[in-house]
Each structure stands twice: as structure tokens, then as C-alpha cells.
Length: 233
Length: 340
Image 1 (cartoon, rainbow over the protein chains, first blue to last red):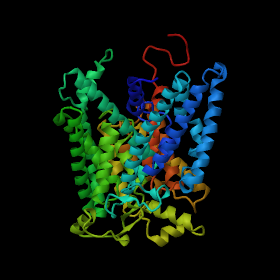
Image 2: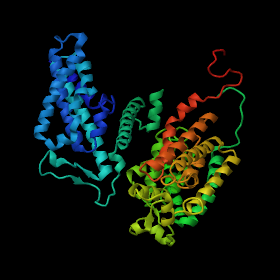
Image 3: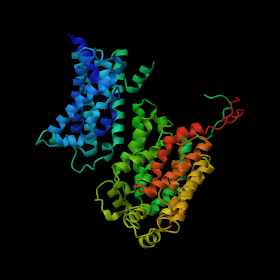
Image 4: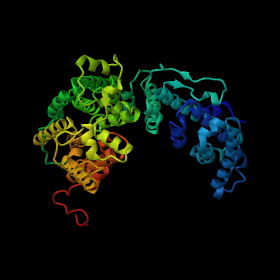
């Protein structure tokens, strides 16, 4: 049975240390295309999370039966079967959103995050650990995509949660900035996604470095430049 | 440090930047006479914003603020932004442009000398993509507003009225040709009162002074002749070809060279020593590519002018061009022979 420390390590790994978007920088295609609003980002991440949790359990349970030489095609078949289920579920329950997310739900099959976790983790670990790994990698993707989506939506339109009525009927988008806000189209276009993602990755690295620098210099407050220097030495 | 011989270049960065400002001054004067003091207001606004962002970024990066602020490079970027943005654009548009230039393009890439892209052109590209309508509104032909009114428009105290603004001659001709298939250039030029002596009315003198300013920079040794020469020749050749094929659909070369940002681009933007090429042959290729792309984008694209995108595309290619155009080191054989 899994102990507490393993569980914490898996959770920390998925949510922060090996965060799919900010540390591994995997799955950029859906990340950049879908993160135009929180709702889109969260729903696609949820779909990926479900697929990852299920595929990790499935592969982990079957890991002794899958011949090593043809493991990749087998993994993809398993993932594809699970994606089809999620795809049909989304189509049935959130049809409007399904139309917006479009090709990106079927494309979860080829998402390198899913395959990377199956190959690197689930293929070698017992089912329960694998499931938690899938869930927490998904949670890591979910919060980072939601943050990126929120920033893009806020800067681009001055609103948050636009399109929420497609998930929760009757709910309304939140207009944060005044109505007169002219909008900043660039944030909603792909270059805006790249620029903001770059800033967020830099922000994560800066946080990690300043924490490491603080540990080294004995809780002395350090700025980014000093931390950078400390990390280089 | 490279090996000897060491040559001292008398041009320090502050001196180069001051000379660029001096070279821009006559163009600014004519531009102000054409449009009004709004131009000067934009230049002041952009300069203040640029110095502010520069100081903040230097502070954050723990670099000596006073020393790097004194190199005037932020000022040149600010002036180019103010000259390429519409003079009546609201203050926040200029500030956003300066933010993109100084913070994102310059300092996030490592500061002066490290930026792969021309900061002023990134500012222009970012703003024209984000605010296409505002970035295409130039003061209407013959509009003379008092200074206070121009300031009120820039700082948002007066409503922006569509009648005050119009497209540039370049943009107006393109739009008219696209929307109306029956018309031709000659008809447009006589009916719309766009044409001056040899290019867009009024604009021709502004761009002419940019050309003179560029000649001054050449004479002072700040820039070399390669980039502007190649830029102007390639734009002239491609526009002449199109014009000879169909004078009804394509304007003549003189119009293209002295309209929009062609001269400013050739002498002040494509010659950026940081984001451009550094080998002589590379500079020729860079200028050629920029002139050609600028023409294609301004004639066939959707944006009013193509200088910014052309220069940015060539900026991406600059390291590769430099790599393949390295001059042969003295004493070595030319590339292609094995003997060393």
C-alpha cells in the first residue's frame, strides 16, 4: 500500500515540480489554442485529467501483459479508447462547449503528456500510484491552463468566466474591468498566449530560484538577480 | 576580448544615439508642420514612458540605472515609436507600445545589444494587431486643430470623431482599389486629392527629410550604406516591375519610396546595429529582403504599411544571414577550399 510520503511526492511532482505546462512544457498545442478563457481551459484540462487517470490505471494494471517491443502502439490504443469515451460524454453533456473545443478533445489521444506519463510512470508503477500520478499531473495542467486562460480573458476582454453558461446553465460571466475597456486583442491571439506563457514560466523559475537562494543564504531576502547569480555559482 | 589588432571606434553608444536623434530632428520638424504639435506631444509622452520603463527594468535587474539611462537608447526607441504611431492616438496606446518595446522586447531578452527584434517595430506590430482600427487613423488631410484640442484627443478628454481622421494615402489607395474594381490609380489620385508633387501630399516632404537625416547618419559613420541602399533599390525594382505591368493597379516607385515609412525604415529602422545584420554582404541581403517584403505586405496585405513586419521577419533571419556571409579572414582562403 502507498504511504504518505510517496503520495505527497507524487502530488507535489504533478502540481508544481514537474508541472506539465510550466516545467515540462508539454502539450503546447491545446494549451495555446484553448486557453482563451477559463471555462475552455478548465474543461479541456478536466477531459485530459480523466483520460490520464484512467489510462494510467489501465496501463499499470496491464503492464506485465504488454510486450515491451510494441508497448507504444498498445498504449495509444488504450488511450484512444478512453478518449473516445470522454469525447462522447462531452458531446452528450456539454454540446455547445464540445463544438468550441472541437478537434482538441480527440487530439488528447496524441497529447504527449498522456503518453509521457503512461510510458514514464504507469508502465513501471502499481495502479493506485499511477492513478494518483495521472490525477495530479492533470491538476497541474488544470491550474496552469486556468491561470493562463484567466489572464488572457482578463487582458483581452476585461471579463472572467465567459462562456460559463455552457457548463452551469444560468450562470453569467463576470465583467471585471469597466465596460469602456477597449479590449486587448493580442492577448486572445496566439502570440499573446506565447508571451503570457513565457512570462508565467519565467515567474515559476524565479519563484523556485528565490526559494532555493533563500535556503542557501539562510532566510535572507534576495532579489531575482542575486538568486540568478546564486543558482549559477 | 578578441585578438589584436584592436581598433578604437570613436562612436560611443551615447554619441551614436545622440546623432540619430539629431538626424531625426528635421523630419520631426516637417512632420510637426504638417500635422501639428500633437507630434511633439507624442514624442514627449513616449520619451517619458520609455525612460520610466527603462529605469524600472534596470532597477529590477539590479543594474546601474544612471549609467544605462544615460546611453539614450531608450530615447531613440521612444522617438521611433512616436513617429510611427498615428499622432492623434490616445496616450495609453503609445504607453502600451513603449511598454512592449522597452520591457518585453529589450529587457526581457537581456537589455541593449541582446534583443533579436527591433523594439520600436515590435511595439508597432503588437499595437496594430491588438488595435487595428486605432492604429490606422491618421489626422485627416488639411485638418488644423488647435494644440489644446489635439492634447484633449490624445489624453481622452475629447471624443474621438471619425471625421477627424483618415487613412494614409498609401492605405486609402489600397482600400479604394480593393473595394472598387472599376477604379484605377490615376482616377483615384485626381479625385481624392491625395497626390502631392511626387508622392502622398505633405508626406513626401517628411520622408524627404528622413532621407536627408539618413544621409547625415551615413556621413557621420553611424550607419553603412549597405542596408538603406539595398532596401531602396529592392523596393524601387519590385514597385517598378509591378507598375510597368499594370499602372492602373500599382503606384509608381517614387510614390512607394516617399510614402509611409519607407525612408524611415530604410535609414533608421533596418539599420539597427543590434537586430540587423553585421556583415556587409549580410546587410545587403537584409536590406533587399526588407524592401521586398515591405512592398509586398503594403500592397497585398491588410495592414496600412509593411515596414514593421518586413523588418521583423528579416530580424529573425539576421543571425542565419550573418552566419553564411562571414567575410574571409585575412590570410585565409575563401570558403569552399579545404586548405587552411
